[in-house]
Amino acid sequence: MDISAHPKQFKVSDFSTVNLTSGVGRKLSHNDLENSCAIPVGSVNKNSGIFIFSLTCPFSEKTFITQVVPMLRSGKSMVMANFIRNDYDLNIWIRLAKIKAAYRMSVVSALYKYEFDGRISTEFDGQRKNYNDIQEMLDKILSNVPIDKVNTSYTPERAAISSLVTTAGLNQLYGVTATPYMGNVK
Figure 1 (cartoon, one colour):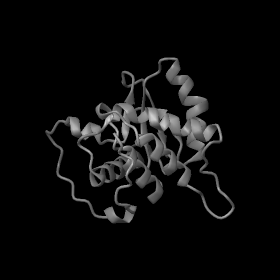
Figure 2 (cartoon, helix red, strand yellow):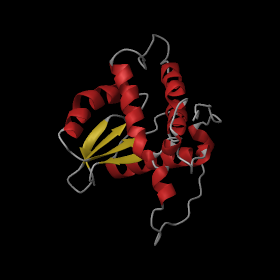
Figure 3 (cartoon, one colour):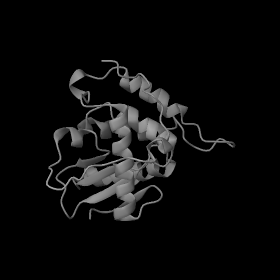
Figure 4 (cartoon, helix red, strand yellow):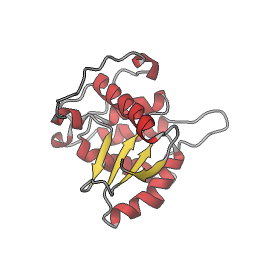
């Protein structure tokens, strides 16, 4: 299924005022988990690690390839969480949220591998960073997604709000203001 179409482009400032209802006494639903940008890998518990990354951060890519992948291969469980640093991050994540949560890390892993191998770049080009490589690679990946991997509860607005709420939570809970961040689950 081709889900590569670019949704409406948002700015972080579009969501400067978001009204949330109290979650007291409410269990997270399947749709809440599908639209989250925090992804558990393995059996997460109090001894698990957390890797907070940004898809447009070359340091996140290097940390993922050199530190996180070996930890996951050794069987360590982790929470992987996307941190929105700018409008580009937001719009890349909104597209990635079209895929079910269980498959998102394979796409993140592929993007980081392509960057690590030099096939795409988010490095500073002398004037600005070029995020078109990530979008073009997402075009290719999202153009042929099996129907069973598509997030059927997806809306661009829900994906945007979820990612920004997660980012605010990561900032409050872990004090994260920059990526990458590695630590233990709190």
